[in-house]
Length: 203
Image 1 (tube, one colour):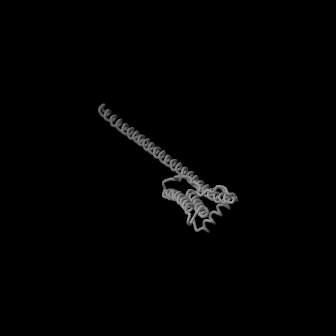
Image 2 (spheres, rainbow, N blue to C red):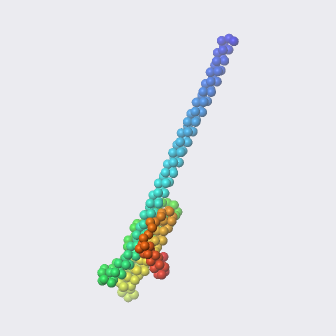
Image 3 (cartoon, one colour):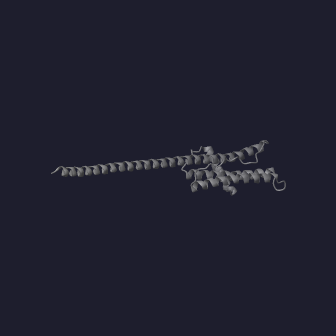
């Protein structure tokens, strides 16, 4: 075999080896690229899951706050009727206005969350309407007056308190927010609110 043949054979071998090495390196590079893309996708998915959990946790906290605000308001309505009755007997000052309801708390952008927020805003409007009704009755010298206004307030307070309790329950059920076990007194108050509201034909 002459030198030229050896050279050509060596060139072919070197070219083949280079091609193999190049192909192997290409596969390695592509493998690294695939792994990098997979890792990026995994991080993005993890971030999306973390953000979803954070949004859910924030929504649950907001729902808990909304439910508590509604329950506090309901108990305040009941307390108002008790204090007014005591004030009437003792000749003390009487309130002719429902307690203030805390501002609505947003609990997310889902259809269910928006429905709850709308219901909360409706309750705010209901409270304003009730207070206007009471004030008008109190000013009416012909068919109303303070005594009649107090009677209206008593009935509407129970009606509104029952609406608040039922909306609070919707928040808790929708977002799986458990409620601390009620004591005997709190349980009796809420039972009275619901019973009185049914008797008055409200809620």
